[in-house]
Length: 204
Image (cartoon, rainbow, N blue to C red; front, side):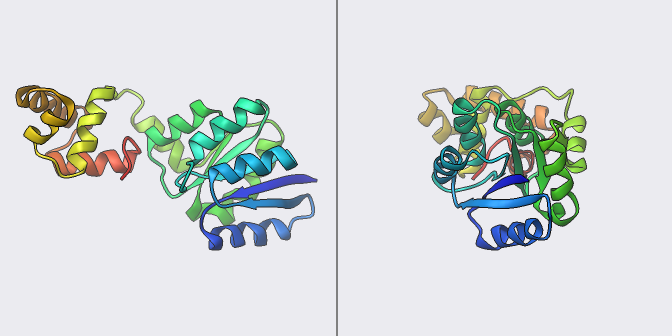
């Protein structure tokens, strides 16, 4: 039996997972959590074979929860479930040690196969996530400072305000913004924010 823990803050998603797993003879759902902290507690109690982890959750997100669980249980097999196929998000999840990445829109089609593959010791990425990673493999990444600037741009701040917040001159902020637009292939600030959100570089 493959013992599965489902972690998602949306009851409908958990119900959908329970229904899918309930129809399989080789799987059982042994627990449900609504955030990363609960996930860690339930993992300690049950030590499931597979953990299905939502990415965006209150209190502790899926990547932080994955890191916390794998800090205590290095062999934990965790599959991320998300609506976001952004390449930066996928890379971050893989670095945290996840073994699978499934888009919620593909749950019915891909979830059970992914659970079995990861349980057998393989890694599984949804095709959309793999395409995103391949598409940006040679891109120049944003520096931590550029990401700070971009977050403040996303929050609606002008260059002068961003400079004041980061203790930098307006000229330096303009230079950072120019680099951000070039690296992201964006036509303006709004376009840069849209791209960054889609790729998982920042979240709101």
